[in-house]
Image 1 (spheres, helix red, strand yellow):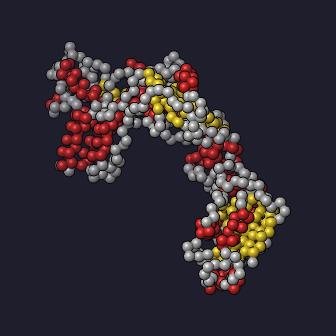
Image 2: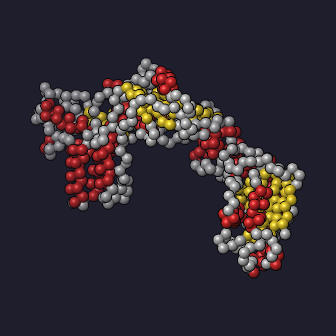
Image 3: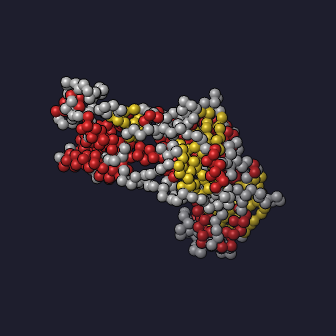
Length: 610
């Protein structure tokens, strides 16, 4: 027995099969509410014995579908007791190979709804695979999941279909027959939709992602995101006074910002931020790199309270050799223009890590550690204990000549600028000695100090060449053809553009060269603007972002003014060696594997194909 009935006007014009296009009003959505009876509890070893479905839109029933099916094996007795479907009833019923195409045509272009949808959909998908029919990309709603969000224990003892049907006054009593249960589920669905409608949920996407964790205030502010463009860029949530609350990036601004108003956003602080937000500003960007850089700059400038990273670049510090007759190591908060060519390491994330690095360097290089200014012409008369234990040559009392101390300074400068092989070798011997004596705590302390030094020297050695390069223009194929073009000046992103697919990119390169920001050279760090109003060299995080992009697959170097080199045997190699050795020691939290080495971009400079 088979029954298919559709009322006049039942053909659906709803074609959304995924949630990529958001904001479809519920009144315009066609739902097909389906229920199955089966010979068992899972598709493996069980078959469908009955299908019942009701098609509805805007609260109106458009059609119904019902049929028994003949399984390939007898129906178990306990299933007959539960459903009332006997073997005699299905003797002349069609097979699934006949019924499934008819059901798929009935449900085409609709959203499938079921009570405990995972069960019904799994059987339908298994039947499609068995019969060789492709499974359409149906959007699926589960009334059980919605009910768990909306129906409390004091209203119904549980979330079974029978309990919910009584609660919502369903016109059909569910009795484990497919069409009856589907009709009851329709009434439950309408009751649930009415409840969420009172909470501000009026679209398909909102219904599918509804969660009681999402406050009504969040849902009411969804309109802020609906006005966003579907383009890549940066978004800024602002409070009533226009102050930035949070800055983020997205490849699709509208799609990303909509998630802040649905259950997919689970961070409590973000819900609090949305509650305070009164506006949402989009900043459309040509490339993902430009968006990431703009995000960093905005966070550094405004310090939005709900951003956790990159808010305080001014806390970064460097270790440098002082400019005096007998140089010593000093922690500085910024590098000035006069520090171009200076010997320094960094940036360090904190003063504590910088001081740890200084302690490590003092282990292998006998620099003076006193802070008073010394003169070669008038040495003092008192020396500290470091001279007695051989950790200092005593320039303070004239024991060590300026020429001898210059050799010590040269060795320290080599370490700071990334030539760490000798220093790491000496520390390796010391670490092996401590480990052999089972003095693991001391060894770990020494290792951590040396790691702080080597990581910072590797970082500065990696950043310095790009910050000293007056201009670099590079290109990478865009995802949709054409080229992403980037201009970097002294480590700062000075400009970016995209050449269209099929167009000659060289005119775009020429235009980028002429319109990119003029950037003043610096020592790798500075404020956002110099005294003349022009931008200084970039913050280290920006230069690192640019470097990662330049080292990504497919990047071509188009134009280079100056020299840009990445040493193969620099501090990065020492860092990798030290981290590998450290990971073999007993430790509660050993360092991870060695990072990938920075590599030169050895691509020819020249023209790009269209």
